[in-house]
Every structure is written in C-alpha cells, then in structure tokens.
Image (cartoon, rainbow, N blue to C red):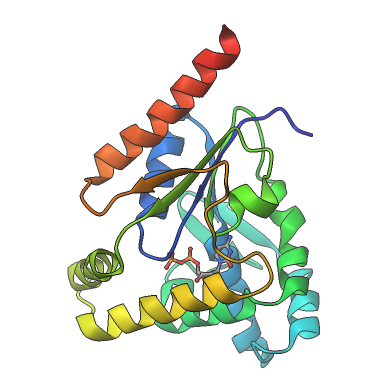
Length: 224
Ligand code: CDP
C-alpha cells in the first residue's frame, strides 16, 4: 500500500465535486484526478471508433489504446486536445453508459492509481473511496439537493452562452443519479467511513474549507 495521502471526494453529478477537489488540491499543492473525465474519454473515443457504448469487451480493449494526458488544465487523448469535446451533454450520458461495465472500470483502475504521487492526490468521482483508493486518508461524500444541482449546472451553461432548459437538466441529472446508484459495478454510494458534506446551502469556499479542515484534523492526529 502506498503511503502517499489521498483525499477521495465522491458524489453525484453537479454536486460541485470537481471545483471543490481542484481547489483543495491547489491549496495543498497536491495532484488532482478527475476520474469522470476518463469515462467521458472512453465514451468519446468509442463514438469516434464506431464502438457501441454497450459493447463491453470492445470498450475495455479500446482503453489500452488510449494515451491519456492531463496537462495545464487540458485533456489530451493520443495527442489531440479533447477538453471541450468530452464535456458535452452527449458525453455526460455516454460516460454514465460506459461506466456500468465492470471490464471498463477494471481497465481504468491502474490508470487512476498511477495518479497517486507525492506529495498527495485529491481524486474526485463516484468510487474513489470505495474501490480505487479504499485506503484513502480522507473520504468525503459531497452532495446537494437535486434541484440545487440542476440550478448550478444551468447557471454554468448560461455563463458559457449555451442555451439550456432547467427542467431538462433536472431530468438528466436525476436519470444519471439513478443509473450511477443502481448499477451493480461500483455504484455511487456513501462509504461508511466517508464524511457527508451537503453543499446545498454552502458556498464553494465553505465546502473547500470543510474538506481542508478534515485533512488538517487528520494530519494533526497522525503527528501527535
Ligand atoms: O461532472 P459530472 O459529475 O456531471 O460527471 P463526471 O464526474 O464527469 O462523471 C461522468 C459519469 O462518469 C458519471 O455520471 C458516472 O456514470 C461516471 N463515473 C463513474 O462511474 N465513476 C467515477 N469514478 C467517475 C465517473
């Protein structure tokens, strides 16, 4: 087992995990893993290769052909920048469809664990604390009420100038939550050893401070 500290932040879509995780990583000088981006990349690469999101074996084989790099906030796959392409609503759905397959999850396991490097890692996703880094020093389950999450996603899209429909976003979020929670392979769930952080009535800064406080308390505990 590695001694490099991991802060695992899991939770449903649009809960603010990504923003919170990145800011925590920045504050501590840790590396950051956006595990959802990996599932998005598989969905995009499959679409381009003409592989169905239901074809588990072909999807798992595809993973080994992908050279994935996160550099300066951008995502590169086999040398091509795909940061915006993987963020589309189509790839949000595709990611949650390819993510149900155990072989795809297995193929991505080592890719994810390779991010655990000194001085530490903040990893965000659905199964960071339960499957990928079960020995993580800190496990947080970050969530918010679905209406709040839909409004946040709506605002984000409007700010980018993308036309959006709030009712449709809420329906998509609830469908994705259901798929993520009901699948048999690594379903989205709060681990018994994770701390619940409901950000419905919190600012991003308050959520970041909440995670940093947990980490500091943990670090003080081990230095005693
Ligand atoms: O940003 P958002 O929360 O909407 O999605 P994401 O974190 O980019 O993840 C996209 C999809 O990938 C999720 O709906 C999950 O189905 C899947 N996923 C997963 O199964 N396991 C992870 N560790 C991360 C994402």
